[in-house]
Image 1: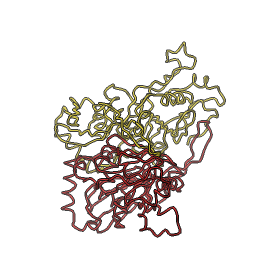
Image 2 (image 1 turned 90 degrees about the vertical axis):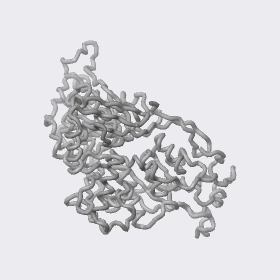
Image 3 (image 1 turned 90 degrees about the horizontal axis):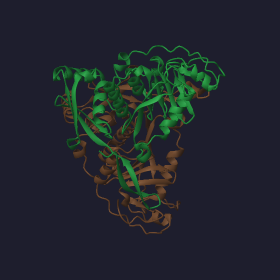
Image 4 (image 1 turned 60 degrees about the horizontal axis):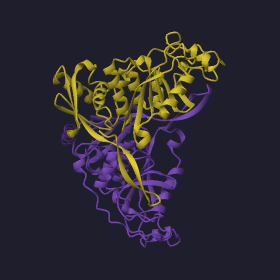
Length: 301
Length: 301
C-alpha cells in the first residue's frame, strides 16, 4: 500500500504546488469474526498494529494467544483469530468497557493501578568533569550516556521517513540500549557501544505507532528492559503508561510532556526526556540515569 | 483548576531549569449515573467538553436533550443528566459500539455515510490582480479573503496560551467568518469586516479541543455555516468529519493534512487549509472559496 499520495495544492500566492500527503486508511479489527474497533492508520505494518493494539489494551496477554492475523486492504479489515476462541475474549472486552469506558485516544482507567513501577533508579556513578568518552566507557548498565543519546537524536533526525516527505505522521523507534562496557564487542571502536535502532514505525497517530512497536516486540520476543523508546509525539500519561507496560525504562521525545506524564514517569521510575533535538533535551524525570553530562547531576528530580 | 504545573527539569548540560508543563487530568463521563468514557483533558472547559463529546459521538443530538452537566474534579467526574433517561441513551451507545467499535481517537465508521456534504462551492468572483483591499471589499459571502486569513493567523500566533507557556497541548478556535460587504458596520474601517474570534479552547488532544468548541456552539446556538475553524492539530479524516458535522465550511490548521482528510474535504465541499503560519499557507481542497490572492486561482483543486 502506498504510504503517501500526491495532490496539487494552491499556495498562499495563488500558485500551484505538487505536495505529498500521508496516507490514512481505516482498518477494522475483527477478533474471531467479531468487530472490535476501527483504527485510522498509515498502513505501514497493519498486522503488528493489530497485535500491539490488542496487547496494549490488555485484550491479549501474549502473542501466543493469537493464532493468526490476516489483513485484507480491499475490505479494510484485519481478521484476528485467537487460540482460545471468543468466549474469554468477549469477557475481557466487556470488563475493559465497564471499568474504563471506550476512550478517545486513551488507555486510561485501571492502568494507573495495573502497571507496576520499574526497578528504582540508583544514581549512576558519574565523575563530574570526566570526558564524554571516559564517562561513556564507565557507563553502568541501565544508564543513559549523554553522547549516546545525542547520537540517537542525530540518527532519528536524518532518517528517511514519511514525515519528512509528507508530514502529518508520528514516528516511534525502538532502540536497544548501549551494552555495558566490556560486554560489547567494540575493540575497534573507541567511543564504546552505541545504541542500536531495532525498528522504526510511523503512523497517523502516536498511539498507533507505539502500539505497532509493541506488536513488533511481541513477535521478536524483545524485552523492553534493555530498550529505549523514541517518539515524535507528546509524552502524555498514556505514552508513559504504555512504555511502563512494555517495561521500557527510557522514553525520549522530540516533543514535550504533560504534567501527568511527568508525574507518572516519576512514580513508575521511568526516565522521561523531551524537547530532544540535535544536542539539546530536557529530562523531566529519572535524571539519575543520565551520565556524561557536561555538569554532573547530583540530585534526582 | 490550574492549567500548568511547574517542574524542575535537568537540561542537556546537567543544569536545572524551571519549566511549566500542561496539566492533564482524567475526566470520567457518567450519563444518567452510567460510566461512559474517561477523557484525558487539560480541564479548561470540562462541561463543554462533555457536551461536545456527546454531540460529536452522535450520542446526543441536541443540547436540549441534556438536563445538566456537573463536574466534580475531586472525583474526576462529569455527571451528565439527560431529559429522556437512560433507556434511549443506552441504545445509542450500543448501536455506536456495534457499528463503529470504540476507537483510538476516532469517530469514523458510519460517519463517512452519515455526514452530508456542505453546499457546493462556486468559484468566487475575484478580479485577478485586484488589490487586496478591493478584493476584500468585493468578497462574496462564503469566500475566504486572503488578507482576512492572514489577519487570523497573526491573531492566533500572538494569543496568550497554555501552548506558549508549556507546550504539549492543541488549540482550536472558532471564528465568525467576515460579514459580507455592505452588511458590516465598518464605515470607519477601510479594510472591511474582519473575521472575529468567538472562542479559543486548548486541550491535551486535538479532538477534545474541537469537541469542546462543538459544546460551546451548541450552548450558544451558533451555526457552523457562518464560521471558520482554526486548529493547531493535523487535518485527519476525523477532523474534517467533525467540521462537516458542525457545518463549518472552512478549516485552517498550522499543521498538515492526511490524504484521507484532503479527500473527504473535497467530497464534503470543505475548504481545507494547512501549514498556515504567518503569511503562508497551502490550500488542499475547496480553493474556489479563496479570494484576493496575489494570483487569481482559476481552477478548483
